[in-house]
Amino acid sequence: MFNKCYGLALSDSNNLGPYQAGAIMGLLHELNHIGLPSHQVVSGVSLGALNGYIFSQHGFGDEAGIIGQLNDFWMKIAEQNSEIVKSWGWGTIYGFFQENSLYDASNLYKFIADYFQVHDPKRHVNLGITNVLNGQYKSFKGVHSREEIIKVLQASVSFPGVFKFVEAFDSLWFTGSAIYEIDVIAPINHCKKLGYEDKDIVLDVILSGNPHLPHQAATIMNAFQVGSRSFQIMNYYERMFGVLRAQSGHPDVEFRYIIGPEREMSNKIIPIQ
Image 1 (cartoon, rainbow, N blue to C red):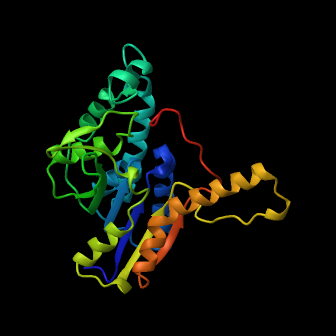
Image 2: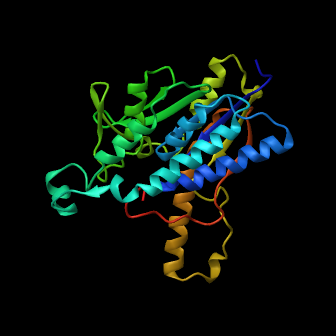
C-alpha cells in the first residue's frame, strides 16, 4: 500500500481528446523525470472517460504502455475518421426531425467495441455518464464486465442531440458532461474507500480550458467586450466548478497539478472529428 493515494481527474476535454492524451503523456513524463509515482485512481467524463479507461488498463511501471495506447487509439480514430461519424442517409435535417441525433454514430460505437477487446483494469477507474430518463449522474467502476464497460464508453461519447443515446442497464444514457465537466469527487471518494484520509490524497487535474482567469482592464471595454468578458467568466467557473467544489469540501486534499491550455480551445462542429 502506498503512503499516499494519487488520483487523476480528466475533464470532458472539450471534444479534444488528443489534446488531453498529450497532456497525460506530458504529465507521466514529468512524474517519471522527478521520480514520483503515477496514479492509482483515475476518473473521466466524456472523451476523458476514453483516455481514463486506457490509463486504467496498464499497471504501475507500464506508463510507456499508457502513452503508446493513447497514441494508438487517437491515431486510429484519425485514420478512420471519415467512416466513424456519418450523416444519416437523408442528411442531418432528416436526423433532426426523424431520429434522436443529427449524425449516425453506429460506426463510432462499433469502433469502440472492437478496439477495447480486453477488459483487465490494473488501476481503479471511475467513468461518469448521464441517465437520460431521470437526469442523474452515475459513476461506473472497473468491476463491471467488459460488455457493461463498453456501453459506458459508448455513452461517454454520446453528445446529446448529436449522437444517439445508448441503451443499457434498463435505461438510456449519454455523456456525463451534460452534468459535470469533470468529476473530481470520484477519485477522492475512491481513495477514501481504499483506506486513505484526505491529508494522504494527492490529485492531478486536466481541464478543458485555462485553469487561470486572466485579468482584464474593464474600464476601457466597450459593450461587446464586456459581454465577451462575461462569457469568459461563466465558462471559467463552469470548467472549474468540480475543482472548486472538491477543494471546498476537502481542504486537506493536495491538488498537485491543475493542467489546462493557456488559450481557449475551439469546439468542433462534429465531435470526434
